[in-house]
Image 1 (tube, rainbow, N blue to C red):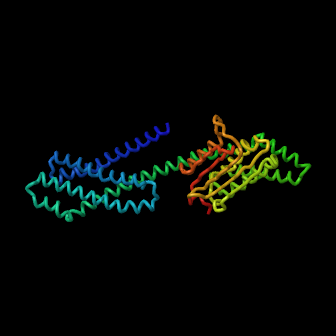
Image 2 (cartoon, rainbow, N blue to C red):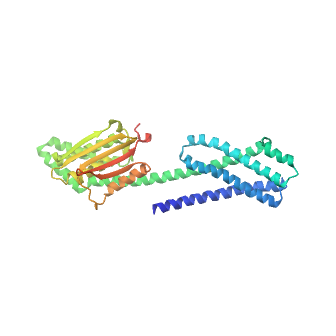
Image 3 (cartoon, helix red, strand yellow):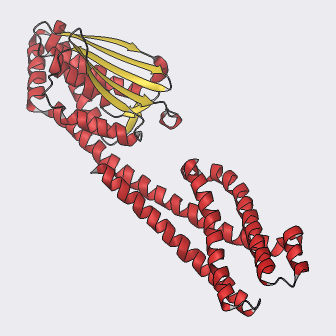
Length: 368
């Protein structure tokens, strides 16, 4: 379904492009058709032939530019970078316009007006005498065409960016709400409050700490849900509070090990993404084992990517459906990083499950 929609969209854009080409150059050539009839005394048949040749030449030149621009992805460039590409191209297009128009005129004189050999030779061998008016015409029309072409693509890109941001915002909010709901579900609160209750008499200081952790966790979840990206350092603060609170329930059954590249802490990632993976590791790994286990968190910079690994004891069942939270995380990564990020869930031979997020190290994502 998705591929069909993409093909239909491309077909629509191509159809619109050719409609604009034919209609635009057809209207411009009508003016030249009028000049050929009234000023240059062309026969009607010759004027018609000249009209279609003008359309063909202009479409061929501009379409050659479009093909090159598409292959070199000029439509993806920013305004400053694009200007340095377009200005030289404008002069090349104008020179090509002048050359082909002069050759067409020269061919017409040679074939139709055979008696005027002097004029024919003038067009063929000394085109410098007619460069200025034809070149200026080429500059004028090619400038208008280039502006129309690239402004249209700038507009389309802005529209697409707006749609993508809107879609990302909806998915991000849904994912954040899912995480918040998981933290606020009765089972989680029941266990946390029971842990705090048991500490009230035996360890009042620990109980106060547990209440602070639960309060900070819920407060962070509420505030971070309004953000798409947050620094890894901020995300880890939330994760550590969550693990400390869970350790009060699991005690020695829950162990945490970390291997974190300090240079990666300033890079931004989708909010609550690591927290979601740690929560899944505890829920589907540690909680299901009598002796508990170790959650190993590793964050590394490698090959211009940030690699975030969460490893925990457990087994992935083949028929087990991936949770909604992980599905939303995968969609957020795909949209936020335009397909350059990925989420992988694998089963190791030593009965461990590894969840990995791979995110490109973009300058725009770095904390200032």
